[in-house]
Amino acid sequence: MPQVSIIVPIYNSENWLESCVQSVLNQSRGDWELILVDDGSTDSSRSICEQYSQKYEHIRVYSQENAGVSSARNLGISRANGKYIAFLDSDDVYHPEFLARMLKVADTGAIPVCKCTQYESEIIPATREEMLDALLSKRLEGPIFNGFLVRFLFDREIIRAKGIQLAGRYLEDEVFLLEYLIADKRGISLIDDVLYIYNVNTNSATRKHMRGFSEIFADVFERKKKIVAANPEIQKLISDSGYAQTQTWAGYLIAVSNVFAPGGDGKVRTLKTLADSALFREAIRAYKPKNVVSRNKRLVISLTRLRLFWLISLLYKIKNR
Image (cartoon, rainbow, N blue to C red):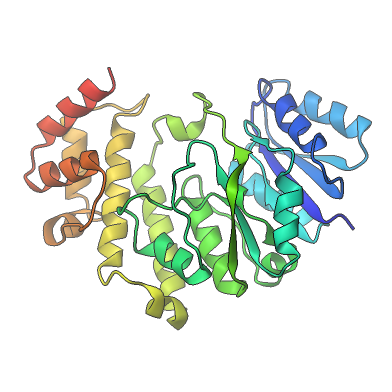
């Protein structure tokens, strides 16, 4: 049995895929299996995957009709044989010592977490309890902890025993990580080095306008609230009594950015509709977030409460020139 199953969801990644796979082949530890999940690619990604699987017996390829990254990762989890599960995005790469360093920590009985490029200055919570609180309470305080799954090693048996799965097209990492940290009581151990190299892919779905974002956020928010309601331990950990409103404001600020992302309409009317929607309006009316470090976020919050949507629109257009 391999120590680690590395799961790579793939969609039209022909320009990045070879460097991604090569970074796994270059690992200093060799006790791994690589699971490539083609999510209905229309380019040569599937062909590239098959070439690698024919050459290396510990690389396997699975295909499905396009259903999104969560579905592709779930398929990979269902096919994994390793003691641990790691995730790698098809446009990113591992440092050659990623597996060696992560497994060394895992062997001590802790949950390993490493740093990523683009987020080197991020403060990662030092304990499991602080990380759970950060995922729920501190969504506007800086620097914000990002719950990227690619920086962890996960125990496969815990994932399967608890039926933990990914769902949705956005923020799915945070919900998965919440459920996992509730189930895995081990402590966190931070590797204070960058072992995951995040490549800026301008074609990534997260850098374009996301249709139906409010519905996506509402679903994620409801899932988080159900997790909190079902876990008294989590309720005691939450340091922000207004965590639900803070989460709502965080979702609203992402929704505003989404309006001005490539493909968004950038209209003042759309901003008004967002602010007046049932999802966001009560938090906007009744709660002003505290300790917001980002000056831009503070400005959007203030202008929203003053209903100066035209000015928000103008500032975004200047910023995006």
